Length: 157
Image (tube, rainbow, N blue to C red; front, side, top):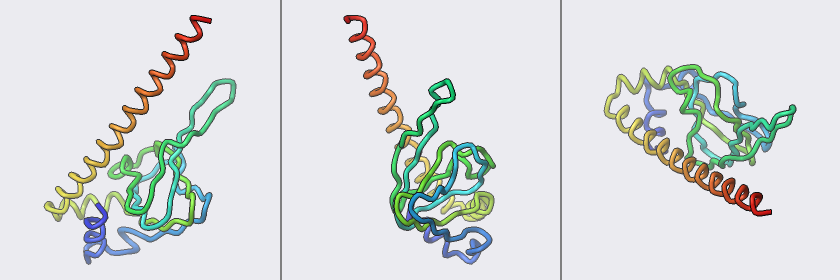
């Protein structure tokens, strides 16, 4: 994805300032917040970020566990790529970070006008999303097994 995005960003049809911009964040800066509407995709050029989700525990209590870390070469924000939707997670800089923020609407137009690059982009994006889904499935299975074991122990006490 890194090489493909770099090729797209170099195109005169996809100019910096209108189609994308380079953003700088310090450690602990929130890049996107869960629930905020967004319509951009992010590419991590340098640094490390943490992805967290808010989990309500009831009685006005919640936790915000980390669900993953992102490093140089990663993308995020793809769920808001073509339509302004609420962000599904909070992303916070762990270190100093350099991001490329890519306008989803402009990217869609560019990819429509450049179908080979569009195909390659969506093929790679599909691979990334499927990988994330597979990791999520594994986490859910692990948590379910843990919960079942914990309840089994409670029944025997």
